[in-house]
Length: 356
Ligand code: ADP
Ligand code: MG
Image (cartoon, rainbow, N blue to C red; front, side, top):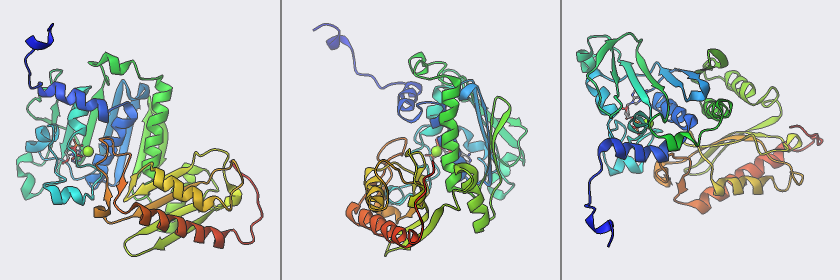
């Protein structure tokens, strides 16, 4: 009878609700950068610049040249469950954007000092913007101030400082700046692999780490992006693949078995452009390679599965690393057969050498 009976049920203040949600979406600087880059991609940008200080804990800024957010929607963008990407259940069943939960910005804002700056291209819809950039800051209590004029080209910047300054328990789980930056860089690389059409720049403590120009859609540009990110020779050592079944398409590159790796460190699989880790996928790939790979060696691949959105549920986890296929068996068989066929053609006449 102690305590419990006398504590009334309360609706939590929204700032606290956001901080609780942040526990699921914002684990470390790398998860922040993932959410912000995905927002930039959803905004149709052509280039993304990421500026990081002290592993992303001290400061993290993502700037894009996308369509921007009108002045009168800046506060909404920071509100919980506010999104421009889905409107009803039918949309949710067929999401084509990377985001849709309307959770990232409010969650990030609740555990950092965040400023959102944006400018839209001049159009009727954004007449209230007066053709200039606007900026909002979120206070320590979660209050959003009125927009003030700012200097910014068309596009959006999210600038945050002091990640987890108000949630010391979370902050304790962070590793060294070097480790945190390592995770963050991996996220940028994974996304950059899938989007050679987008330019990426990453800087850490003022030092350039990655500078990738947008490829103009031809194979040469895409292959050079692969080689930049996976090491010279990746494209030369791999087989291009493009297979289709009724509703499914699998395309990308698998490294020739002769160049298999000693670690499973180059395995990238994307479902409708979203990098995922999935048991079913891993199993299908491993099975396809099982006949052609020596024991203890690992395949390397960059593969893209395109599947009608209704056949895959991406709303399994807030961070969206996981997906659930509606026809798992069918997807598994398609992956296995497509890869096995390509590998059996590709290995003819190649003598085994090892790399990696
Ligand atoms: P979600 O991405 O799930 O919609 P977010 O909290 O990440 O939720 O973002 C909320 C909204 O803010 C988005 O739906 C979008 O309208 C807007 N927004 C966020 N980032 C950007 C950006 N970089 N450019 C343009 N609009 C953005
Ligand atoms: Mg988002």
